[in-house]
Length: 512
Image 1 (cartoon, rainbow, N blue to C red):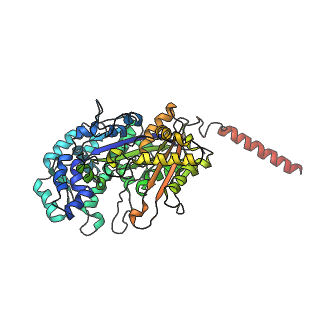
Image 2: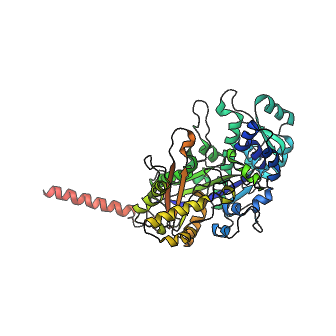
Image 3: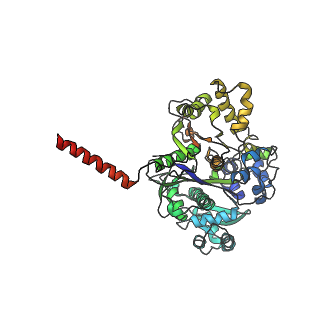
């Protein structure tokens, strides 16, 4: 059976300035340990307007409107640069404003946990009715609003999580159980954000690639949150919850978790399911994490920068059976960080990069583009984490030098030719390899490149169950043009051959 192909990709960002202050872990922790913090007082002055977020070059790259190569032409820092004539809608997706997203959270709410004020409800329904991907049926799920006093009572007496827009209280998320901490209002807020941003990602995947949701067989959700109750914490299932809203009536699905590496794990799982013939069309999807909003905010404010971690990220990718056109996913060339790999940078790069290349008799230079941890350096450098993608490319290149596959003096050119400037928001799982899939698909089909490697890394030790790192990688390459049915005999011809062989065998038995 032939390899699965990448049929399409969708990418979304959601500008959530109020959620930075009220839901980002850095800020909510600061409120507890240092409520009179100078940082908290200064933060509101460092929030960007929606228009600034749309015009921001890395964000336009994320939704496919400018290429990674075009992004690299902008002089850093990028936060004071603008893309001319930028639009919220891009080639691969969109950048949604906060008020519309709050409305989408209500649409995603299957248990009447989201309460919105009358005034806000009317405003957001009017806006969502104009959205090209939000249907009337979806908007109809936003019922009549509530009065502000009822919402305040839920927050003050029943531990509901407040929802703000433009620094104004516009609603709340109620707890789903009186005792179960896994269903408290804070967790339900986070989970509804994941679901809503996952829905937006999948809707954009379908619209941008002309995909019928009823043709989807299976969904793999791979974000960093986990839904469940006290009896099965993290049991899921975001995948089917997202598929339900998006009209995937013929799909089932499940959640995959692996911290930052989960999307690449999910890509390999999807490709394997399709290659095995289990399903024809599998979507991998992930929503965003409110906890990561403003994660490096203190460093940004200290350096008089805007808070750049002000967007939720989401993506969706369709993996389908070979059509002879789209790039194939080489599931026979998988890199993996095993239990015995070790944690040294060289050991990690060897396991993820050179092991699959050796299996395919390829050199490091045979991969045209490596998509690694594609974090936006505009965010990470002021926080002291450096330029993460460039650091990865230098390590890959250094390994190439050690393997005598390129000369040391060629290292800078290798980084430029085989690497890319990072453009993804620091949402943990979102930067991990997958932001390039949309570009890779288009560039491979256009013949600009032939091979790309998607690399996902993760930090398993964050769960306090092991000290191990994690990581997987997979190569995608140009389609040979041959599908699994090409070259095969027609069914009728095959039947005739079998019948003739059986008759010949029977005849020989009779002669004996």
